[in-house]
Length: 287
Length: 135
Ligand code: SF4
Ligand code: SF4
Ligand code: SF4
Ligand code: SF4
Ligand code: SF4
Image (cartoon, rainbow over the protein chains, first blue to last red):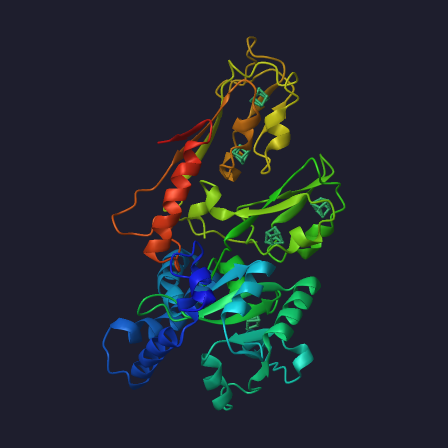
């Protein structure tokens, strides 16, 4: 075993720092399931999950607009399934840099959400904001019919520099995992998203679809240090920060915070502290 | 506007201020009001009005605190109980039941080993909090 396995082993306190989550073994097992799904031989089981989750979400969103009374049940059912197919979690900058350290290889890919929503595919590296991680990307490169812009391989240092640049610009880092079957999630991507483009953020905030879950950290605001410069408000993609006119400061609603850390890195007065979500008796149940 | 599907697995919380103990908030400089990151506490500067009859209560102090309508915002950070000099605040939490062998935090990606590791740490942490009551 190498260093990484010792420092990021299975007893890691945070699930995504477990090296197993990036391994060929996990990817392979998930891929075998995908193959079974294509032939549709299995009744129930994993094939059913994947086949049912997508239509359920579409139904739920339709119900939100047309048949309100059916919406909660449909969305609850969709949530239960969807998280087993594909999931995402918000990360801080430091955690996303750690993610890049653990996984290999790393490549630039086009943004799937922008492709689905607007038919817009970035073919130019300077416009791409999605990082593909791990051996799954070899497959991405091989099927240009589906993954139109292919994979542009980069080394770890360059990927790290880009993530820092995106974070400065105000993009949120989300990890993407694929497949929860056979012993937990396999991590395959690091997305750098903004609210209007990102389907995960938009569906979570608008419809309560829990494909994207909240991060392991949460922003706690210190009123005494805050000067009321209101710079942090512009950075939050989740609408968790509001101006408190009585006090001339801001208030961060920790129940709406996803723990991305964008506000913390922009505050010049150290008024915002990122803390572990599990330290708070209410937030530790709220993902 | 963000919508919320009511999740019965999330604990319910109540913030209680003991009116007998917290008589004059101006002496402690409204510690709970300034320390709470969630804006749970409100200061009223007129005599207590009974909810049922809307009549003033002559026995109540001039300034007092309510943690009523805004209490669902409380996250249980325990800053208020740590700083209150009169020990007037109690945070009551009702935690949903967890079955054996289940991830207690309902975190979809945690393995059960990680969840158990975290639970040990969390139980130690909770025992250090003053004024936390689990019901
Ligand atoms: S999650 Fe974000 S970066 Fe990833 S595909 Fe969607 S919008 Fe693009
Ligand atoms: S950036 Fe910092 S000082 Fe400025 S309003 Fe936000 S928390 Fe307060
Ligand atoms: S409050 Fe700060 S940490 Fe929380 S979601 Fe908004 S920008 Fe991110
Ligand atoms: S526990 Fe924290 S959030 Fe809750 S009332 Fe006290 S200071 Fe506010
Ligand atoms: S800190 Fe304690 S004594 Fe002071 S106002 Fe709050 S409840 Fe009352």
